[in-house]
Image (cartoon, rainbow, N blue to C red; front, side):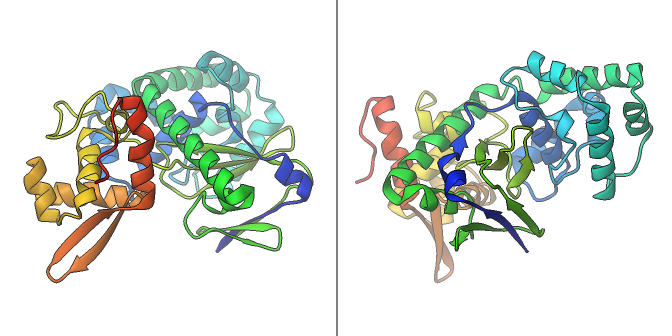
Length: 336
C-alpha cells in the first residue's frame, strides 16, 4: 500500500512547516496512542497511571478517535491555543460534523449515543464534549507540552539542515522511512492506499513528538494538505525520577530523550553490547534493549549481531544530534 502526494511546481513552492504544535491535534493523537498496542512501554505506563477519574475524562473521546489517529476533523483544529481551539470546535458547521461522523463510522467506529447527539446539535452533548476535551487536555497535554514543543523544534531544525544539504525533495523523502520520489510524486509506504493531487494548494508539514504511527493526511479549508508525521525523536512520556549515571539532567538531549535514553545514546559512541549498556547504567538487560530499540526506530542508533552479542553504534544522525546540542550545553560533544 502507498500514500501518494502529487506535487506541481507551485505545490513545492508552497510547502511549509507549521509554526508550532496544535494543542487539540496533539490531544487527539494522545487519545489514539493510548488505544494502540504497537507502542513502547512509556505509553503503556502512561495508560496504567491515568487513574479512574482521568480515564473517565478521556472515555468520550475514545468514541470519536480511533487508534489510527484519523478522528473527525472538527475535533482537532490547528489553533495555537486551547481556548481558540475549543471555540473552533463549538463553531463547527453541522454539515462538517455529520460528514465526519459518517466517515469515522465507515472506517470502523460504532455509532454511539454521543455521536447521534452531536449530529443532532444537542447542546448537552456538545457541553459534555467540551468538558472532556478540557479535562483530557489537562491530563495528557499540559504536563508534556514543553517536551512536545522541544521535540517539534528539534525536528524542524533537523529538517531545515537536511533541506540545505539535499534540497526540498530530499527533505520530503526523508520524512518517513521507505518514502521516495517518482516523477513529481512523493510515495510513502503505509498500510492504506490514498492519492492526493494538490493542484497548487501546497503542503503544511507538522511533526508530532508523541505520534509513532503512519503519517496522517487531511485537506485543510484553505486548500493545503496537512501532512502530520512522527517527529525525529519520539517523546518519552514519563520523566524519570532520578538521573541515570553519566546523564546531565540539564543537558538538551536528556531533556528531549529522557535521562536514561540520552545516556544510552552517548554510550553507543563506544559501540557497546546490550549487556555492557545494562551494566554501565545499572539497568536490566531488557530495559537496555528497549531503550536501544527506541533509539534505533528514531534513526539515532544502529544494531548489529556479533556472535552471541548484539552491538549498538551511534548513527550519523545520532552524532549530529549530540553535536548540535553541545553548544547549548556549553561543551563539546563526546564524539571521540
